[in-house]
Image 1: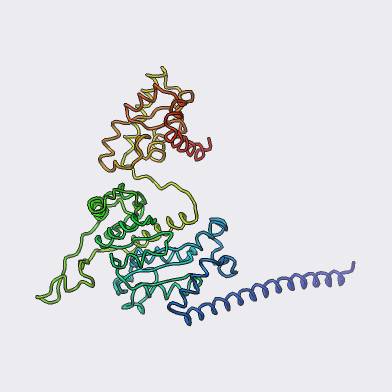
Image 2: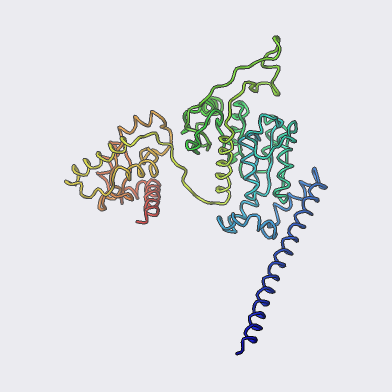
Amino acid sequence: MGERAKEWLLAAGAGVAVGALSAAVMNHLSRSKRREGYARNLLESNRMTTGNAQSTRHLGAVGSLDLLSDEVVSEQLTRNIQFFGIDSQKKVTKSYVVVIGLGGVGSHAASMLLRSGVGRLLLVDFDQVSLSSLNRHAVATRDDVGTSKALCLKKHFSMIYPECQIDAKVQLYDASSEAEILSGQPDFVLDCIDNIDTKVALLAACVRRGLKVLSAMGAGARADPTRIRVADLRESSNDSLSRSVRYRLKKEHGIEGGIPVVFSLEKPKAKLLPFQASKEEETPSDYQIVPGFRVRIIPVLGTIPAIFGQVMASYVITQLAGLDFQTEPVVNLDLDHYRILHQRLIEHEELIYGTAEQVLVDAEEVMYIVKELWRGRSARDQSQKDTGRKMWRSVNELMLVRWDKSKAAGISNLILLKFSEADAHESTTLERIQEEEPEFYSMVSRVLKRAEMEFAL
């Protein structure tokens, strides 16, 4: 083939490649423009459709239509769909969540619920955006100062995910508004309130109505993000708000636990600032927006309430999607305690079996067994009632023993029991436990199966 012929062939091939690339680019740009136009039309529609008309239109959409069938929505949520799977993400887009309290914690929680595709949100707060709240608010700008927090979020959210039905109530939650705010069977309620009276009333109402609720405890005056936890209210420690809520719920409503909370194990780094009046005759009550609400200032590092809100959103989204995971237990034991339990296991094996050769765990693996599997408590007492220093004392009564005596003392065959319980366990058989205590047998089998899966045994 001559040189000129080769040049023509190369030119033709390059032309075909450029043409194909151009077609692909134009197709992508055309598709992008269609999506932009569609989104723009939705925004215009949302601005024109307000009040009850908007609520009615969207309520039908959330209840009956598949939002993920929309090209723009499915692409906006594509990373969530890849993470959860389409069926689980559909559960999220069909869900209804109520967020009460829209400050540093609540605004970030609501923002990520929206960005994760929750189909319907009710945003409740009586307060306004202030200049000093901009250090921790999720979306507010200086232009929003003086506007209600609820309407501020609704305005910004409508530009992020206009398909979501967003209802905003500039309202204080109390007994008179309970029915209005908690009606409609929400899939989850987020308590981001910082007033103890209102918080206790809301939590009690959710328990009474059988609603799933997640509560934020004190985020102010903290700085260490690694100490933030999700646990039952009974397990929260180093937090005065948790302690007060726990006391009030038990005393006034007979509720001792069963409510998940986000809290920090960190001791506060700062104290409430004293009230300073601008005039001599003024009192703190003169500055209260609502009677009974504090006017003293809590120093806040804006990152911590933001992380609280992100944690709450992540917890709720995974719950809505049906993704099961184990929260890290709050077990206040140090490595010396795990070494004691390890040594106690070795001594028990030597006493019962004449040797410790079948002990296949070290102190660090004992930590996993005690903390992750049995949460620092006897397998026969998983009620989460011993926390803090009380738990430290209770370890003196605990030991690890084999669940199945025919198998070695490995990660997936050790249970934590009190001394007296361990003696009783050694004198019985698994067959008898299965026959007489089927629920306990199933629970232990389930926990030990988890260890097998996590260690690929």
